[in-house]
Length: 234
Image 1 (cartoon, rainbow, N blue to C red):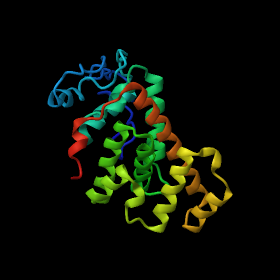
Image 2: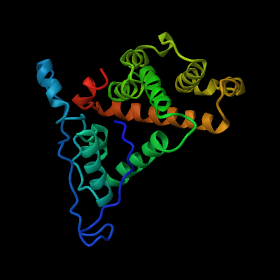
Image 3: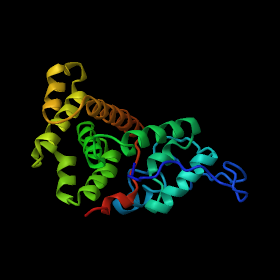
Image 4: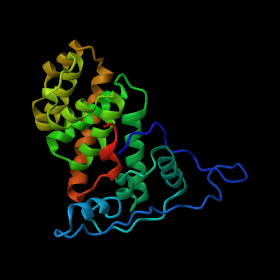
């Protein structure tokens, strides 16, 4: 999902009352079976903004809050992230995903927005999640102003010239992703030594867990990233 600093705004009617007389909008992207294997690369890339998953799930009518949120995404980003379009077949699932994402990635935290995006990419790299690597790799490039850092996060964060803080953070996220049963007090102690509070450690774990879930759903559904992400922050 693309970064945006806005949370779902409440819809407002012409009378000024919230939640009244605002026509719900439905996603403009059609969910349909994936592309033909014989399509050219150019044609396949063009389809990524139209056929975004391999799941044949018809989009539901957006409720008022999600219609307003989709409109805000279009205003701020110029598009609605495909992950939101993918979840839009079920309003409770879409709202839960948006609420959790915004809380973990955008709410106040001892972790910067860049650090949270770095965790997202390091986790997605281990899981080889194409959607999240493209979308959140773009976010790392944009937030850091460093295109090379974004590429290193995608390929192998260990090859990057990271601060001790960031190396400890990503090592913890990688271990929690690959061997969650092996996480021990000494792992938390390394984070504290690197300057993280216990609340920060909770946030590192929560972001790590969220993207492990998101990676698996995206891979199961063959979710395709918006083509706009590929050129961002280059």
